[in-house]
Length: 368
View 1 (tube, rainbow, N blue to C red):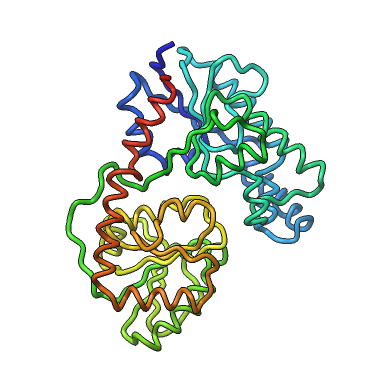
View 2 (spheres, rainbow, N blue to C red; view 1 turned 120 degrees about the vertical axis):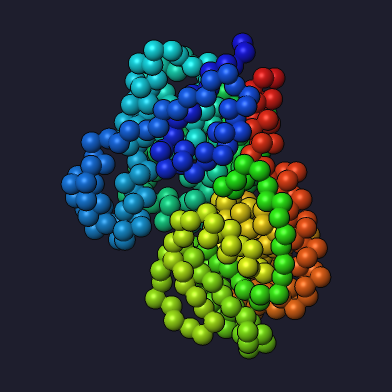
């Protein structure tokens, strides 16, 4: 059956962050509609505050309490049932549902409309690579959540993953057939790639410190101190949030909402560093590559699928401050290498890490 109407479901925040994907998908379907998830009763200010306070006492930290608050069977079921009711009450039923990420399922009891899923990570991967994202108060609670997740993946008509790492997890950890998963990658906050110029020589290094510990902020700071010993004029710009960091050569700008400011920042940057301990498929890297900024990343999660080692950036197997500093110094003192990597990065964004290409792959796969 031809898919004319595609209904997109998911968390409102995630839907907003992927607006360029949906713009690209709209070229392949007669109608693209949206059904963002509505808050449940326990997500109102008072019950949320009380519940998270109690969970913090049980889990030991607020970050773990946040994980328990979001990843539990009761929450999954409530969200899924609400999504199912909302879909059933639509005046016109969609041909296919597009579920963004696996925080819940678009159906729980009656699954009479086919749905596909787009995933950046799984709980099994989070449990292995960053446990704060996969905290459970008991083995029973863990198994109950995994049961919900496994059911959602099993019922899906097809699953599109950002990385091969996620596809492998779906196969090995959830028993999903390989032919049911297609790796499509991801892209950044742009519809068409940047076509303007890019120069080097600022000696400016950029780091997204929005989740400082997980993204390897400690390694970045230690490495930058070593870089300054060799290149005194080197600068490190940290964005994402304000941090208690006051060191020579470091500028902590905090969160930047303006797209023009972000654009200027990339264009004035020689190098992006991302030695993260865990980062599923970071949009920030593709944003940088779109402007021709080479990236130095850790060999974790989907990052080595974004950056090709010594082609459009550097991939470090086991990041240390010394290794990161050596690579930063090498690149900053070899502008011809930076230029070659910059051109390769922009070509990859144009030919692979593109929402238009990803949307076509999704549409073609559905049509087969």
